[in-house]
Structure formats: C-alpha cells, structure tokens
Length: 247
Image 1: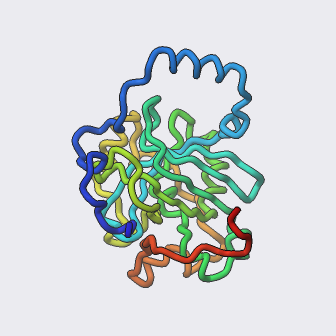
Image 2 (image 1 turned 120 degrees about the horizontal axis):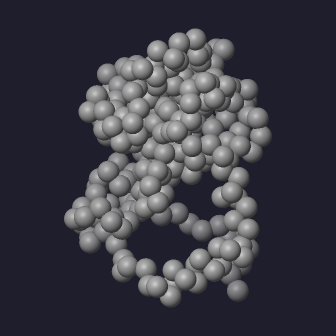
Image 3 (image 1 turned 135 degrees about the vertical axis):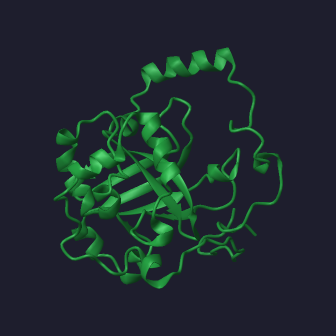
C-alpha cells in the first residue's frame, strides 16, 4: 500500500521525464467553453483569497527535501486562514497542497496529539524566508506580525520535486524552516527564489527586527525539532462501516 515516505511504484506518471503534468494539450473548444462558463459562475470561494506569501517548506519525514511554496490564503476570521499552496506564482503553477493557519489562541485550544501536526511561523518570518511578493514591507508588516504568532498545518498532495507528473500516493505532512541543521534552507534554494522575484532576503531580514513569535512558544509544535521524529502516512485496508446497509 502507498506511504508518504516511499517512492511510488514505477509508472509513466512517476518517471520524472519532463516537468509538465501528463495529458493532451487543452483543446480550443474546451478553452472557449471554460472562458464562457467562468464569466457566468461566481467563483466566490476563490475570489476570497486576498493573501499571497512565498516561503519554503520541508517534508516531515525527510527535512532535507526543501521546496519553494506560494501560499494563497482566504481569511475566514481573525484567527483562522485557509490556503491553497502552489509551486510557483505563474499561470501554469501546480496546486501541490493545502495549509490551514490558526492564531496562537486557537492553537492552544487543540489537544497535544493534534498540536504535533502543526508548525510555527516566527523563524521563517524573522529570517525573511517568508516574503510577500510585490507588497512593500511597510504595508506587509502588520500581517507579518500576525503570522509570526500563528501556527500552520500543511499537507502536500503532490510531491512535484520528486519528479511526479501527477499527484501520486498519499499526502505528506510538511514542516516549516527552523534554526536547526536540517531546518535551515539551503543557500542556493533561497538565492534562486530571490533572483526569480527580484528581492534580497538579507536586506529584508534587517527590516524584520522586532517581529516576535507567540507569547509562549508551544513545545509540542515543530515536534521534529525537539524529538527528531517526523510523521508519515500509510494507506491501510480497513473494514467499511456498516452503520447503513448498501442498497
């Protein structure tokens, strides 16, 4: 059965040959139909997304694998955001996962078992690993201060860095950059991001002085940093619930 920390069984979708997803080019008739329906449909959930941040993430079961992520968020309320995660900010970006972000107050209301699945954001913000593309720091500062005190749970559904041309296997839990050996993002990865977006992480880092993390850093979050244990998902067969008979 599939596991998030194992390479999927060889198939055309896992060949790693080429970066584009498998499938034929979109037909002109299909493209025209979609443009027409897009004009008539509300797309309300998508249009609620008002936040775009770019950062990095590591796999919980293998923090040496580091990826650039673009997170588009919809603020549900002052304490909760729901986000779609892409591998770039281009029109051809791949949707690779989802992240939920909660305030310190909501995080502290969770059970310790649940808290193990969440990561903090203060280090990546203070080190300017998390940036707000095209938004001046002065404008972004209030939101960055809020995010620095928050916690996130990020499930990666498409391990595109592995060469997968379709979402294969089961989701992988992701962790945020941290100030420990495996949690420090490689210099070349940051350099590539900075060059693509015309920013300087080092310069931004100086402007982040004074941004603080949670009032009381929870030791269960970022579980792998303290206990050197990650989490992987395994798919197992199970008996179906028989609370309602099949027709």
